[in-house]
Length: 267
Image (cartoon, rainbow, N blue to C red):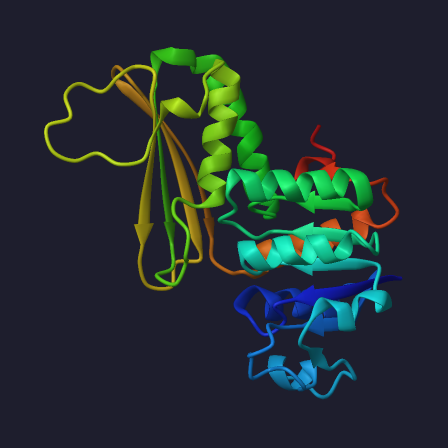
C-alpha cells in the first residue's frame, strides 16, 4: 500500500486529490500539510473535506509529516513546490508535482534535485485525456507541417494565477519540437496593426472567466479547411485521478524526472 502525503491539503486540488486517494485501493493518506497561516492547520482532514475524522491532522510544514509517507503529491504554488523539492532532497521520497507557473530556472532546479535525489513525476496537466491530446497534436503536426497555421486557445477560471497555462505551453512545445522550431516562434499577444501573420508562428491565447476548470483547443487552419482538437475538463477530479495514478506508479522508481507518458505507457 502506497503511503501518500498531500501538500496544499485544503486547496481546490488538494481536497480533490484526497477524495480520490480515499476512493483508490492501492494508496492511503498518511499526511497532509498547508502553509503556516492557513486556517486549516491543526484540523483533521476529514473536517476539511466534509467527511468524518480520518485521524490525519493538517500540519504547517512538510518536515512534520515527510517521514510518514512514500510519496508527496504537490499541486500548490511554484515557490512552495520548489521549497518542498529542496526539503525532500534530504529524504528521497517520491514526488508528484502538478504545479504550474514555474520559471525556467525554478523548473531546472527541481529537475536537477530529482535526478540526484528522488523519483519525480512532473507534468502541467495529469489528465489522461490531455496526455492523449499531446500525442494527437504531435501526429497532426507531423502530417500538416508548416502548411497550416497553428493557434492554441486556453480558458481557465478567474482565480488562476499564471497565464498562459502550463498545458498550453506544453502543447506549443510539442508542436515546436515536431516542426524543429523553438520558443521564439510563440506569439502570446496581438494588438494594433500587426500585419500579415508570419508562417513560422504558434499563437497562444488566454481566457480567464468564471469557474472554467480548463479548456484547450488547438487550431490547424489551412486553405479551405480547419482542424480543431479540443479537450475540456469539467471537474478537477480529472487531474486528481491522474495524480493518484502517478503516485502509485512512481514509488520504487529510480531517481529521475518522469512524466505522464511514462505513467501511461505512451512512450
